Image (tube, rainbow, N blue to C red):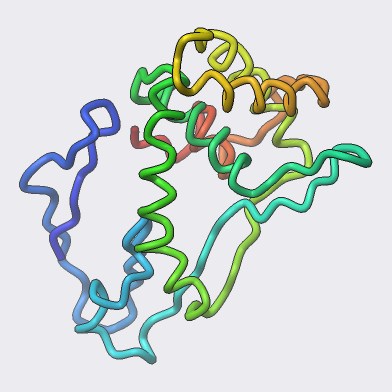
Length: 189
């Protein structure tokens, strides 16, 4: 198997990737992750009984107050914004400006396949918005009024103003949240 190595800072794969030889015993586990990982075209040469597909997403059901709910889409956007800044050096305006294209990719490459998985994992954590606030609030505040993404930045800031910030010091190094805020045990950015 040739595994791609993605450079988060450049936004491109490093060629040629890494060669990985799976044991011939048939007891090996190969984990595919990313926007295309549920696409059956990528696993067409693997017998279906040897596949176990898992869909992981923050499926938010957090009711902040009587009038405000954390939408799953905004949850993913806040995660991505924090990760884009920490690992790619992108300001919030850049992440916001490409978000519509990201959503098109989700509708094309993820959502058509999410109902054909063996397991769905909700990766949302009740305390997560409080942690993300520490990272996202200054990024969103830096979006200027003349920027086309300003309105969305203000909408997200209004959402973040509804919660108190919390330190990430108690977030375990193995938490999936660390993929977005850094200092994780599995960082490969």
